[in-house]
Image (cartoon, rainbow, N blue to C red):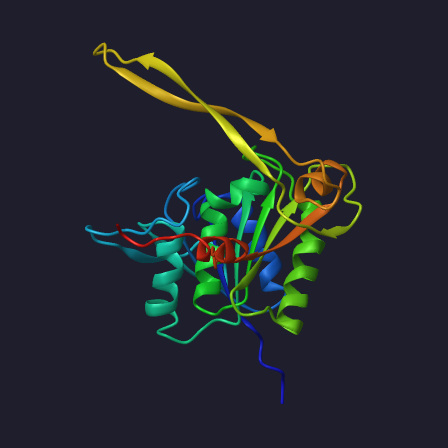
Length: 258
């Protein structure tokens, strides 16, 4: 009897026609049976937003042969929720892969990323999940050097599984040759935001978000270091945001109301 192919849910935040998702679909087709549910347009920076108070729509579309595809009017997280509840009808795919994002989602960017939030939602649904991102914002980015790593990482997750509540954040450097893979921690960094004030034709002010990435972490075990030195970074991520180390300190405080 032939071995059953794994079922693979592909999502992203750049939209269903983005070049990055095309590459991810092609690589997943070499591994298993692919179903795509992705936003109908770009949803970068939406984080873990969901749609409340207005209708969500999901429509079957036909772009790539032998791939079941749906475009969704909502966010990347909406896509995962609808995929599990309506497309897969409650059964779980064997793995959820998100991306390939145009641009890095390393360090603090993981909190804002629609790509990673879709993968987090997969993990919340107890589906082994991976977010893939590449350090190139251009529409015609060359993802060729990412391809073998995408297959290898996905196959390893399928073979070994992931701990409950854990997913992988994978980022690829834009280099001539990727040196290999580093298992990393998330670097301590932040965005120093600025808001460029402009005026519209009606003489009303509006603001355009800009900013500078500030790295506060010089460790050589971080995702930022790995990428700067030509390695693919893999950070195991969890969605339990409890600061467990702070609990003993808080238990020593006096919260009695006077």
